[in-house]
Image (cartoon, rainbow, N blue to C red; front, side, top):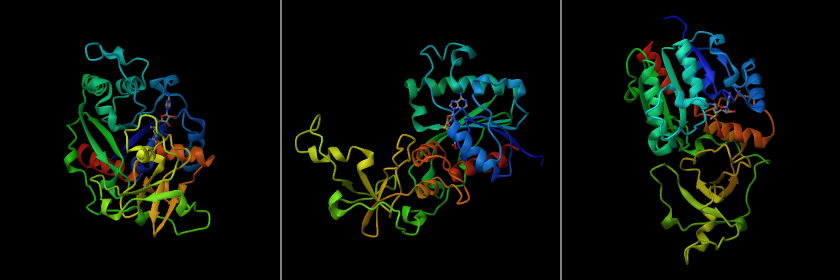
Length: 327
Ligand SMILES: C[S@@+](CC[C@H](N)C(=O)[O-])C[C@H]1O[C@@H](n2cnc3c(N)ncnc32)[C@H](O)[C@@H]1O
């Protein structure tokens, strides 16, 4: 088989790139607008991504077999479905269409938040599908969860595969049967870990602890001030629980989705009878990043970068089937 070439759009810190390179696909072009991400990417791949994709002439992008990108989600006008190609103009999805129209790659592999499915009363996804079909692609999509791919994180994402040859079959994707837990990826205990004092949290009664279908095991919450406003009578004490950053999860289960907005890295776990913050390194492991990956920038910046990235084993499993079914 000839080398399979891909382009890495909205490249971030290169999570998608690692997944595709692990399938021996070759990256021939990358684009990313954020300076801090660009630095991290350059450090790891020895290549500086081109900047703002809206400023790049599609004719100058090298030929490729796969266009890959986890693009930011933006709404289309309510008239979206009726209008032509133009109604996506000004959105980042338009940039993907513009490049696909010119370069005609066999496959597009797109990743986004699960909510894209419902976004703008489902118009956003419908409009995307319609425009990809107009370019001659079969379009299939599925919501996949990182926890089914060997990383203990409940992270649901929509994956869209558009292909020229035949429709992609998501049912063939290899999910791991292994039930991986947070405790399986934890670092050895060390002195820089941030433990909470027992007075700083409240553990819930054992009888009320249950494993949720997502694999999360909620065991307690940080003892932060109670917010009375808006709380129903007798539930005021639970107002702390409503904030994700106050929740504590057992290391015997999976971890909630890492978010790009949690730049303080306030993810707390209960492990070996103690509560502590997850380390930055552990966050990278929850996304399946290799130990060799070089972080870059402040801690806050790194938490943002990893929260924006992808669970590598999940993308890799999709890439494996793209290779199998479409090349
Ligand atoms: C959801 S993140 C994708 C992260 C990536 N998949 C990873 O593994 O790190 C979307 C990325 O698109 C970038 N972006 C937004 N607008 C852009 C533009 N006009 N040109 C290039 N990149 C852009 C953002 O800076 C962000 O890093």
